[in-house]
Length: 171
Image 1 (cartoon, rainbow, N blue to C red):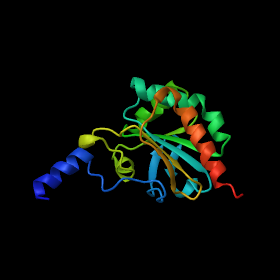
Image 2 (cartoon, rainbow, N blue to C red):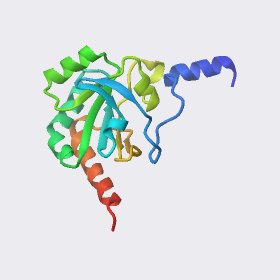
Image 3 (cartoon, rainbow, N blue to C red):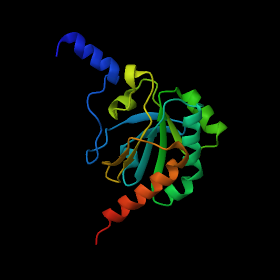
């Protein structure tokens, strides 16, 4: 591939190296959240629902976040931590969390490093694509929602989390 083709490919993909895939260890990360710094190492031992959304306060992102808010108790009952992430700055994330009374942390990824690590940076790198990852307690990617139904996302996540946990139990 010539140099200009590689530059064009990087622009279209947002510069991502490779997709985070099921079965692989989740990319190690450290991010500022609405409740303080969040690291992958600090989440060890818990199931993690990490959802990326394009932009705070937009209709689809608000609907998705409120679905996860409304289903939060069912997810925490499955030993899961919910985290939302977008490339918005921390102040915007704090306002979004407060406005919609979200009971989970939102991660500010204004430098786009988290979106790049999980390969969710949209074309031209202007926003994070809507994608959700379920990480197992060891920190591996257990499931990826490439397509998200914003209104029923909490139910979809809970069903998949229940399935994953049942499959992980020793028989």
